[in-house]
Structure formats: structure tokens, C-alpha cells
Amino acid sequence: MVMGSRVFIISIKPKFAYRIFSGIKRFELRKWIGVKPEKNSLIIVYVSGSVKAIIGEFKVGRVIIDKPSNLKNILNSIENTGIGPEDYSYIEKTKYALAIEVIEPRLYVKPIKLEHLKKILPDFEPPIGIREIDCSEPLYELIIRKAREETLRNN
Image: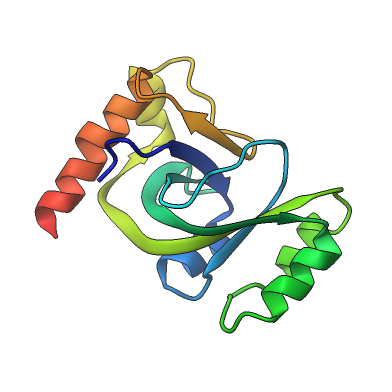
């Protein structure tokens, strides 16, 4: 349930989104820009590239912020993270990085395409990284009321 939980939206490349929703990737790595989801927050997944749609969500488990080399050591001590060399190369030149544990990934029954979002919310721009969604935002209502409720009803 979302009530009382913080909600974030994150942009992910299609191949990484596939790995998250197929259960292969159990951690998502990000350059840390000051935004820190907490345990049990909800992450809405916008897939960039050719997909250009909000396709699902996951609950946040552990959140680890550290220097990339330390973060790599921590994650290497955890089994089956689904993190590979390409993930690590993305964060290696940043001062601090963020690892978000993926819990309960759920695909939406009806993804929300960018073109549809823009018709309803003309100012919507997919996040460059990760940002919090305030419950007063129309985007929150669109995702929570439409995509989530339909998906939960069909499960």
C-alpha cells in the first residue's frame, strides 16, 4: 500500500528494466545526487529508450550509500545481486553512489506511454535520474489511481 510511503520515479534503460522485472537484478545502482529513498518506499519505473513508458514499480528494501569502490565490495558480499560490470562502470567516477534493493517488482497491466502522459500532463518530463513524487502532483494521481489500481485489481 502506498498510504504513508514515499513515492519516487526513476528512469531506467530497457535492458536494466527487463532484468529488474524478470527477477534477475535485485539492486539498482545510481549516482547519488542527494535523493535517498527509504526502506518500504515505492519506486515507479519509467523505461527510457525505445519504450518511453511507465511500466511498473517495486518496493525499496535496503538502501546503501557509499563511495563506488566500497559499494562494490558491499554488494559483492551479497549473493545474486544481478549487478554486472556495466552497472559498476556507470557509478565508478562519481563521488558517492546509491544501491537500492528491489523488492516485489510488479509490472503494470497497462503501461503509461510518454505520449499519453504528455497529453494529460503537458509539462511532464521523465526524470534524468530519480526524483520524489509528491502526493499532490497530478502524476501521482495518474499512476496511483490508474495504473496501480488496475494492476492490483487484476492480480
